[in-house]
Image (cartoon, rainbow, N blue to C red):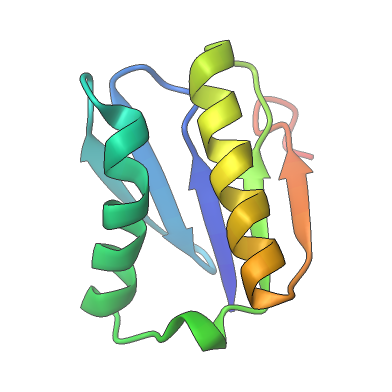
Length: 94
């Protein structure tokens, strides 16, 4: 199962499981909201972290700080779970 993380927008966080996307409005404290939101989505869908096989993170365009938070969280989760992390520029559909 693929976990998708998009923190490029200043007003929302997007977390996805495979093709399903979930949004959270997070204008303030978005960096502090990301991990709890990922946990919330996984619990909602009853997916344990161990079932995540890869992570894809939006690499831009977007705010530098927002992208940095998303990439950092994706890398930390990927390292902790021992799974690959890939960047994707969603504006290009890559």
